[in-house]
Length: 388
Ligand SMILES: Nc1nc2c(ncn2[C@@H]2O[C@H](COP(=O)(O)OP(=O)(O)OP(=O)(O)O)[C@@H](O)[C@H]2O)c(=O)[nH]1
Image (tube, rainbow, N blue to C red):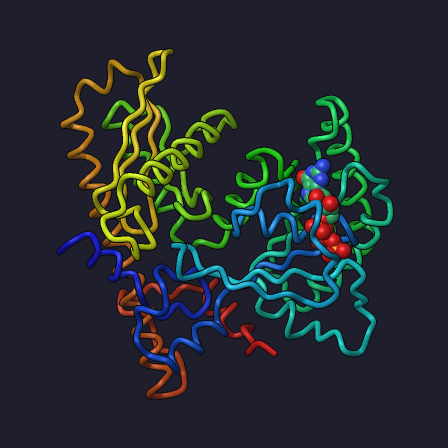
């Protein structure tokens, strides 16, 4: 089986969680629209000018941060399909800052019902009391409709703040937001906080964490990465979605921002070089393919090693130069790793296809072929609504 075939294996129907592979390859128009409707949603909310549209444009549309200065205010919900070009597939809904939950036209059931994560953006350069009030209102409203939502608070625009003030703001916002929730009787609701800016990699890192929480196979991917690094003398390994530079998994050692930035930069280098020198045919859109790999030796004795996993995913490893002498072992272990990942998603595909088939024939879901019903999936699947 070629690598391209392997990538195509991931195509399938994924009713609730992340889908793997472009829908267009499915070749079934009706099925495609069904899948589009069932894609998990990430909602971007927050006050006006807090930076929601900028985040979406920078992370998923390669807009340079400076260009966001010219973005116009959003005045209706903007739905953005993150698919086709990327391994990770979902929808991002960008809300206007002035949204009014008490407006009768605000369909909270359908908006929050199928939502996987709600990202609330707070402008840390501004007075954030109003934002905290809005956060409390938003969480209360959303949690009542769907208690499976992951709530993520981005303390945003921290590029303008010094380190002490950043930490102080985070502590203060954390404290006040959790107090507000406790007052509303929602002390059990968990909020995750991230310090972010579009002017550095923090926004990509934060989005990686949001996306990871919605990938049901994450523990398996982490385990596979742990096995790979411990048997190959690798210090840190990231599994990247190449297009968005979101890492969908890493091994269980702590992530330090510098390592992540190095790996992101390496992906940029590989893509740039591939675009300049790797294009066989002028019409070729994606030059990152099964032949892609790269090795960069830094002058501090560290090696960065990139291998493609499939059309959308790359493994980027950081290791000491002396450990790279056994490159054969690393390469062999990588092939085992890639096989294992393929199997994980093939199994996932089979389960999803079986569920889709049983739905089509009987109208009610049947147990998964391996007998392991995915409770999270079925719960959320029930709450999944058709898009307006
Ligand atoms: N310094 C700094 N400015 C940012 C950052 N992110 C966004 N901005 C700026 O914030 C302003 C508002 O950004 P938008 O993305 O339009 O904000 P929004 O939340 O979508 O605004 P509405 O559509 O009105 O709700 C723009 O001028 C951006 O350039 C950041 O990380 N740091």
